[in-house]
Image (cartoon, one colour):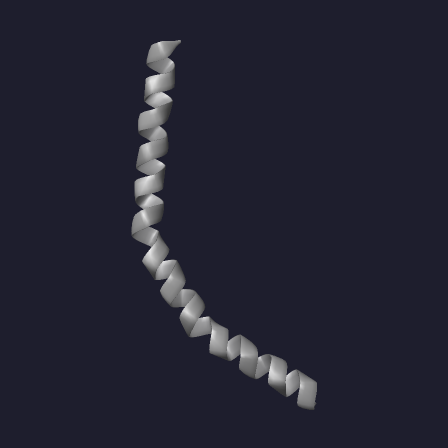
Length: 47
């Protein structure tokens, strides 16, 4: 069971590493889409 747990830890680390690589891109995407969302909300409020 110890070996399986070690493998899970390694896999989890790999997944976390992948998310660390993708996180800045996701943050950038949120920064780019946030103003568009706000603009749409304003248009909906005015319309």
